[in-house]
Amino acid sequence: MMLVLQLVIYLTLPTQAVVRPKLQVWFPKHEARWIEQAAACLQEIRNYLHDNQTPGCTAPCACAADCILKDLPPTIQSNFASAQVLLGLAPAILVYFGPTVAEVAALSTYRPLLAVLLSLGPPAISIVGLFRYVDLRVPFTQPLSWNAGLWSTWLGHQGARARRIIQVSSYVVTLAAIANNVHNSVYTDLRTISGWRCSAMLMPLAWSLLAGVVHAWGMIAIRMQLGSGYRPSIRSVIRSTTFLDVLKGADNVLSEALLRLSALCAIIHMGFGILVLSSLIFISALEAIQIFVMYATSALMCHVVLLTELAMMRYEVSKNEETERSAGPVAMYQVELSRAHTL
Image (cartoon, rainbow, N blue to C red):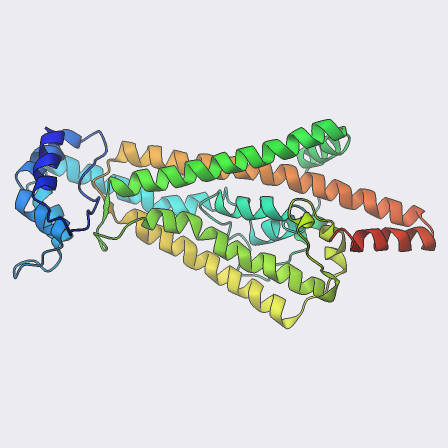
């Protein structure tokens, strides 16, 4: 039935028309019902696909959706309402799984490429403490919990081969999280419409990936604090020693302004996610739970990678501090000279 319906619609499209993917595929729970309803709304769907605005309907997508949703039973309406409540809460819940701006910024001075990827993996940003000043030194100075301390020590005592395997695994897990994030967003978008922006495409994907823009302000700010001491290179994209100089950097007006901007953008990002996800239609409560779990999976995968890399970074910071305390002035000068060539 679905193939027949799509064939009828596509055969009636003009050759110059732009094919619009909304209202073509559905989530499985009520798919049979939507296909049956769409068969009775062929004219409205054609208007949407042609973008024909009729005197009685200036929003073809919304008119087609209203026709399909006509005479919707109260039980399905309640199911939709439950799904919208859950999806609306999702961005606010996911912030507890997401990284802070300071954590990703700190990691960007150790593994810049991985930090960029981690900013795209989780769909949400932690806003805990964002109403206060964002201190980029916290990931270096905050006391470790007992479990994190053991994890950091264990990672630091691993051999070169084990550490290399962990580093490669971090990239693999992060890329898998990004792929899951993108797939989940596109899959959801094609099977739903937004109540306030019916024909808009890829809004869930835009919400999930815009987290990278927020983290970018923190990455720029931490380099502003380093000032003229920062010398980027192609080699340092994978592995940088800039993190050894973060504690020596000083705040300036520009870096503080960027951190304030990142805090504001993080709150706006969460609000945008709530607005987008809570407006989705044609999704049941059970399917909303599945979408939420998939987003949370990406966030948790990136959280584990972030904790691992920050633990390794802090171990190297502590090891470098011990080396500098035990070294003489000449040795310290050689360490600084060697570091300047690897930034």
